[in-house]
Amino acid sequence: MSLQGLYYWDICQGLENIPVIIEENVTKREFPTFQYSPENIKGPGCIIEPSECLLPGCSCQSHSCLIESCSCLQRYGPTYDSHGRLSHHENPDTGYCRPVFECNALCGCGEACYNRVVQRGLGIRLGVYLTEDRGWGLKALETIPCGTFVCEYAGEVIDYVEARHRQLAQSPEDNNYIITVREYAGQGTVSETFVDPAMVGNVGRFLNHSCQPNLVMVPVRVHSPVPRLALFAGRDITLHEELTFDYSGCFGNKTAVEKMLVQTAPGTEASCTATIERKPCHCGAFNCARFLPLDISVFNN
Image 1 (cartoon, helix red, strand yellow):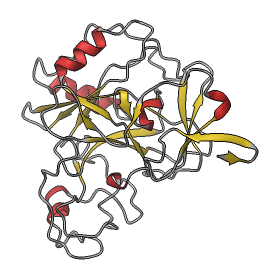
Image 2 (image 1 turned 60 degrees about the vertical axis):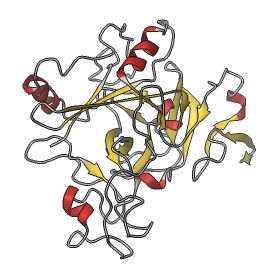
Image 3 (image 1 turned 135 degrees about the horizontal axis):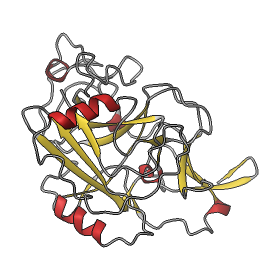
Image 4 (image 1 turned 90 degrees about the vertical axis):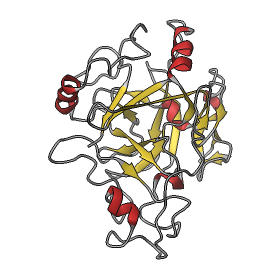
């Protein structure tokens, strides 16, 4: 399609609510080949179908759920405000993330329920482009208010064995797209999710790391116990600003993360990336850690 005299094409090929564009003259620089999928799909070692509805639903029959009567909101607590923006992401008493559960396909409420955000899909105009020194990147094509859902980091959901196999098969020049998300739920309970968008994935695969990011990753459960790795604006984002998140899962809360690592039982930090060579970080932030993180840890309380 043409826009102001330039030619663009939609990398998601109509699979998202709105196009994700890239300038045509950039495609000659070996745009990566992959199968686009807006949501997670079942990969090797995954025992649960990510799209299967396995979580209980509410019996609300209203346009939008009310906390006084909705079993979902009473069970998990409200997550979004009336504008559908993330609120109360962290527990003020502990600093740890709260679990996020949306209403799902078994709920009686309507599609417009304010507790349905991530499941609605992409709603922000995004553009893929070539950065100066970090390969492909993703930028905002409109201003994004703090708390707004931006996109998912979606791909194949795989297990530890497959993740380990894929990472060890990579050369130092290969990009590692595999995200390892650990959720700590207290009493030594640790849940791990491995997502790889290298071969099958969505626009989230183009997000670069920053030690001072503007997005925060939150595991959100909709229909399935398998979390959807949702990225929300951690602050107001300006037009054409590059979108980034911290691959370690931090967003201005390193103290709480470091504290929890000390409190965690021995062995729970074992990682499929433990022997993978770390790559230098080029984010340019004043607090740059010099190397890319290997895993994301999320602490639910």
